[in-house]
Image (tube, rainbow, N blue to C red; front, side):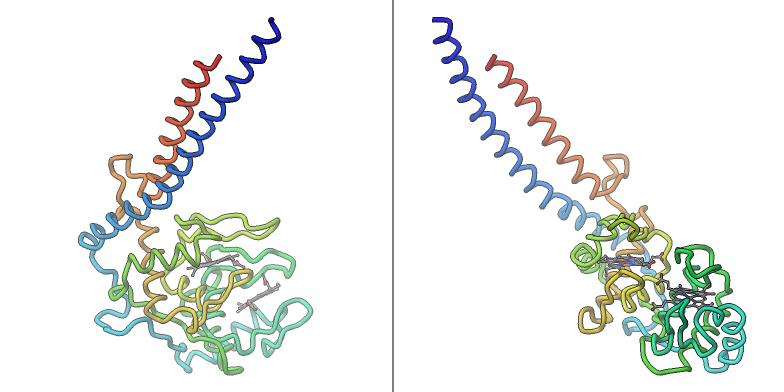
Length: 288
Ligand code: HEC
Ligand code: HEC
């Protein structure tokens, strides 16, 4: 008799569990749909208002062309040769041809040299040290000089880009970024650990030129996105989005303490999951 009752109870419970389970998965699907749709909507709204509010950030002043690439003036080459001999050649060799300590730099182009030197990655103090972002050792003018010198040694590689953010399209930049960059740098650009010793760094400090250089040259473990992948206009759009991430006063989400549209999406999940749990407890409680 007792056994019969127990069996009944167990049966009823498993039926209820099935009901709770279906409700839960239904709600989970809804929550996922919310995540898929909500941040995007929230974001586009924010972008529209940001576009109205923000004054265009213009690089290259009145230019009506997208990003331009220029090598530094040839007159800087002698100064660059001397700087290279002092700061780089012990590792990269006198003609930047490479050595056991460091790679060949010939043919990489001015943008690559400028990126590594202006972000403070180079010069390294010792070849086993990790090349990371730090305050640059060389002045802006010296960075251009070293880039001019290395670029003069062999043809190849992009020249130094000057993005034109005044012409850029922020919402296009946002979708290009979420499709091509967010997997490593996260959608807010805070960066992420990719593997044991590989980090995709935060994008909070890179200048527009450095962002364009990173896209076109692919530093370290980052893929290179050449002209076959992104047009110059698309590079401008992405750079514009990164600079928008760096200036969060443009963001939506004020009602949630200005945490921004992406965070709002997560709040939506939390609320969704919260009500799910309450529902689960409620039904579960009745099942006892
Ligand atoms: C103490 C040794 C050392 C010195 C000095 C040094 N480098 Fe490097 N450099 C390296 C090493 C090692 C790497 C490879 C690092 C990596 O891939 O993370 C490298 C990588 C680079 C790269 C990237 C190459 C590529 O294939 O993408 C550039 C550009 C560069 N160095 C430029 C310079 C310049 C310009 C200077 C002088 C201002 C300089 N380096 C000084 C050791 C050095
Ligand atoms: C596969 C992962 C991956 C993808 C995809 C990727 N990156 Fe990177 N990115 C990296 C890594 C790793 C580094 C660091 C390279 C190094 O220091 O050796 C980096 C460095 C950078 C830097 C330099 C930051 C600084 O301050 O020095 C910028 C800017 C950047 N990425 C922008 C982008 C943009 C924009 C996109 C999309 C078009 C993108 N990245 C796509 C992995 C990635």
